Amino acid sequence: MSTKTATPTAVESQKDSSMLMQKRMINSNYDALTSAPETGRKVCSTFVPGNLNELIQCFGMINNLPETNAIQNAMRQQSGGMIQTAERQGHSEDVCTYVKADIGMMSKGNIAPNGKPMPNPDMLLLSYTGCFTFMKWFELLRQEYKCPTVMLQVPYQGDGEITQNMRDFVVKQLKEEVIPTMEQVSGVKFDIDRLRENMRRSAQAEDDLVWVLESAKNKPSPIDAYFGAIYYLGPMFTAFRGTQEAVDYYKVLRKEIEERIAKSQGPITPEGEIQKERYRLVVEGPPNWTNFREFWKMFYEEGAVVVASTYTKVGGVYDQGFRHDADNPLESLADYCLGCYTNRNLPKRVELLEQYVNEYEADGLLINSIKSCNSFSAGQLMMMQEIEKRTGAPGAFVETDLVDPRYFSAANVKNRLESYFQMIEQRRQGRMIATAS
Ligand code: SF4
Image 1: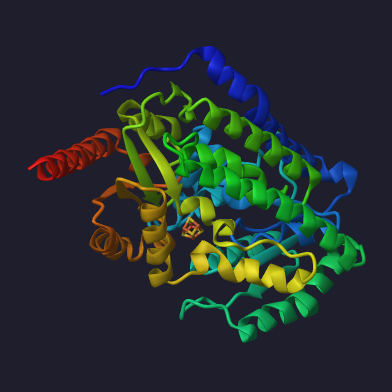
Image 2: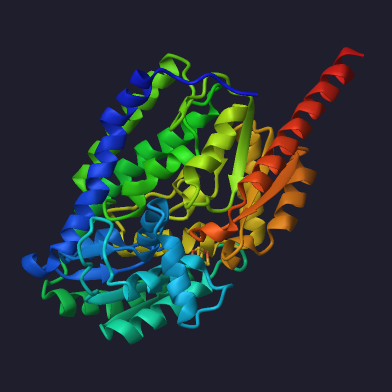
């Protein structure tokens, strides 16, 4: 069952504004990174969950995110060879493929997506937000680069709450370890007013981002909150949170979405606009990157729109009310790290999914189970069953990988999706008959 494609003009006009702006921003960060040897700016490598971009900017450092590099390489069909290089060096098949893509990229000359050599990091900043792999990954990088390394230990939300003790523990480390190391590496003295300014801008951009994500409550939804939202989150999750560029980007994006709502338009996809929304889904788990477009097309062809997803919360769960707070900058950085999706226990994740299914009036929950991401995959079957029980919405499982092309079986994924959509359809018919009789 296919939806009709939009005119190329409609797709192009979307590209002309926010998408092009987003692309320029991401490219500009790669240019800043690869020109660091000439500009003398220092490079801080860190991860998306627990990314302290506002703080990094206070020291004039450039933010380098290894997961984002792996994603960029996957979308350019480069990651497969990098992963095999890492496996030949002894990294097991079961290791998170972001890690192997990164190790393979280093071994192949560490060329950035702009085709220029990536500089070595001057500092590794590990905000440990619930995924054990982060720690082993930076251990490997530390051996390679031998640069100052800081581990910000963020207590796991095992009991599903953030206590004052946990917050104080993180703030103490920021004051006593993270900030002094940044001062030493960059040669710049910490200025808390600069941090406050960055955080003010973060909060502004976060307000607009939340508005955009919540626009999916409309029917039809003007956005796809999984595939499409990946683009919207690029600036927020990478090197731009806290900048004026991010504030401007989210204003432009919000305006575009407002126009789409006013015209009752569905989401733009690479194949065109979804003109008839047939299924509204919540998705749990990261996307597959090597076959991103092919995967999205399977949804497009069925008129399936993702109205909420948990992956789009890995760099901050802003829709639950958190904002960077300029009046309490260090405490707020602590709360940001403590609240990351990967730092939440399973009951909290289930609660969030339940809320999404209900508030976004979704037809069901789809789990994209990632072969090499234990942090997300552990407990997903239980989560699915629990959501089915609590909401009555059917769940389904597909299995792919992050950036390893060997684990994307298009035929299998398509079959499963088709059966799932049929199941949703049958339930609808059943409900209609029950109501009529
Ligand atoms: S959360 Fe998953 S994808 Fe991210 S580093 Fe951990 S194992 Fe890898």
